Length: 145
Image 1 (cartoon, rainbow, N blue to C red):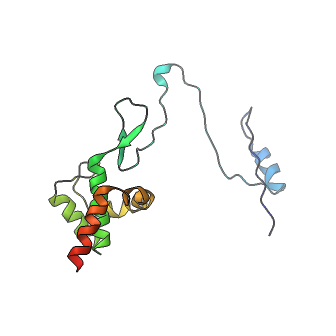
Image 2: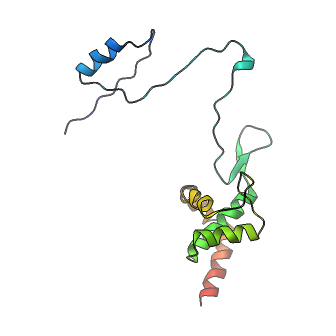
């Protein structure tokens, strides 16, 4: 099977149907579209919004991210529940009993816990090195004996 070729072009005029047809006849197909527009004033400009990864928050200087202790505690609680083979609904119930809320200020649900799994996978190398996790893991081993 052959390799694909990609070309990125900046458009200087609107893309026409005939240009799309010509490219398609040459074997090309679009893979992405990026839109841009000019704004009238600085008040109209808004920076792109990107959600802060779970377990982090914007630092007081508004220039970097730092750990959010409550969200880290929630992530460690979820990891503990997973290690103990608890259901997502039971993990959610335990988080609610401890007074934790989701970022939306709603009670934890099993789907809320499930949706955090990719972030837990991403963060687990750092979480597993934390003193809090090492101590929890030690207690889990003793409880299993």
